[in-house]
Image (tube, rainbow over all chains, first blue to last red; front, side, top):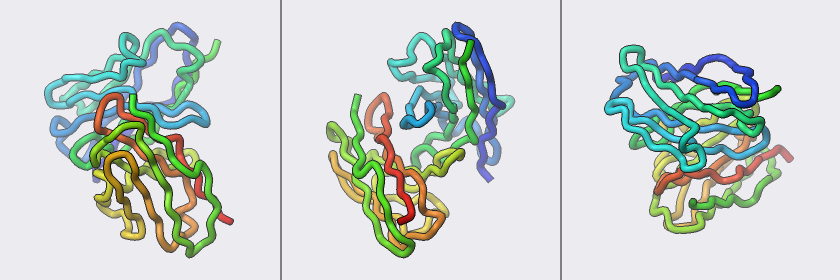
Length: 117
Length: 107
């Protein structure tokens, strides 16, 4: 079945970068987009950006512009989200989700990124 | 950015009840509205897209309606597994934005 599997939890120091992966199974990777959404503790979901897995074109939320970079490796059916200049407020669970005509479905299991000195 | 506001923020109901959650957009979003269900420690699960279309495998007890700025999610015949937090999301324009969530609790 269609499934997105994300990489494991990360602990980073302020100022560092983190790169989270999202591997797709059960569908043609290049036929759909991959979106990234994060959720800080007790907060609402926050959309970060997306990549067209076929073309590699990206769109980012202005909030993260300049700090986020979404890429993909079609040979591995994997998308990546790299966030730089980390600060404590970036502590959150980061999710990838497949995008398409039916919206964001399914979602990956989430990756906890903790930013702490 | 389009602001999404859900009401209520929390709701107590009993097994078997029918409940309605409202989502209001700060400007018109046509029908580009989705609903998600999230239980503690789990990823969101898509229930509805395009305001009223059910995702595959989602039971028909879930229904959505609305257009423009005002939307609703209705859940009929509540079962224990339905007690969760529900989020609306607009995807009419960037950045996509979510409501603050409605926590549905057992009375």
